[in-house]
Amino acid sequence: MGQGWQDRIEYGFLRALEAGLGGLSARKADRAGAMLGGLIRRPLGIRRDVVVANLRRAFPEASEAWIEETTISAYRHLGREVTAMLRLSSLDPEAVRDLTVISDRCWTAVEDAFSEGRGVIFATGHYGNWEMAAAAVSARGHPITAIVKGMRNQLVDRRISDARRALGVETTGLGEAPRRVPRALAAGHAVGIVADQDARRSGVFVPFFGIPASTHRGPALFALRTGAPLMASIARRLPDGRYLVDARRIDASRTDDFEADILRVTGELASALEREIRIDPTQYFWFHKRWKTSPFEEPPSRLTGITST
Image 1 (tube, helix red, strand yellow):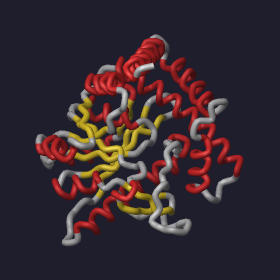
Image 2 (cartoon, rainbow, N blue to C red; image 1 turned 120 degrees about the vertical axis):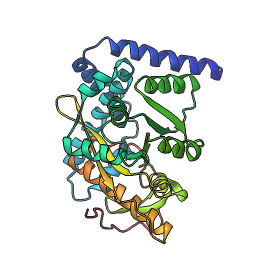
Image 3 (tube, helix red, strand yellow; image 1 turned 90 degrees about the vertical axis):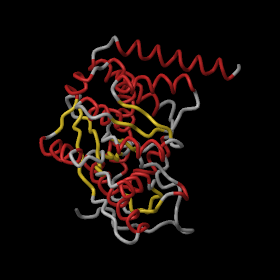
Image 4 (cartoon, rainbow, N blue to C red; image 1 turned 45 degrees about the vertical axis):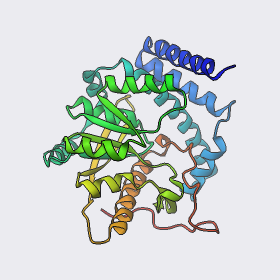
């Protein structure tokens, strides 16, 4: 089968899923998503060993029963959020505002950051629903550009980009980011960056659950170079199906040691994400090998994972 046919089949499957889920109520879509997550876990068993290994490393004091229960819940959450993301294309800004909860404290801090006139960088991780976090900012009147990694299937990639654009979320690829991000910030817009995957040797090593993790320096680099306010942000699913969107400012002031500044700011972002994950570990994307790259030849010792603010 040629690659073109494979791409078309994948694209057709995506559109069929969108159509099918779009006809369901939110509750039924959630149930379908949880069932999908259960199938991914068992019998398919996709990445189950990675999830269990990551949870054991992050929570070494946890019992095997807790690890198993959290693993099951993480797969169900994955399935629910996959269906939620597929349904995003049918939402308008008003629906997004109804689905998201932002405290007065949080939104005041966000508006104060925008008032400085240098745009705002929202750094997040694969926690809760990061697509909803970006949509929530756009739905409240602030254009946002998200840095994304392009997909192999161009048909699917364009469809997902179109769905994001319908919600006011523009996208830029990794290669274009150094040029487009400063322009977006200079225009007073928001920039969204999901930066919690293993960055290999190009990243900086900061503690994440007490273990050195290679972490992308992009959020810190853009904030330090442009002077744009930097916010650690998340969108956590609530029991009623809505999302709590939260954002807290990270100190990204410069000193005379730029590399030390990168390390400090990146560490603060990792610590902020860790604190959120500890509130509900089932909502984190444990499916990627977060500690794949190690700075040590021997197994890394645990470090202090949470920094004070």
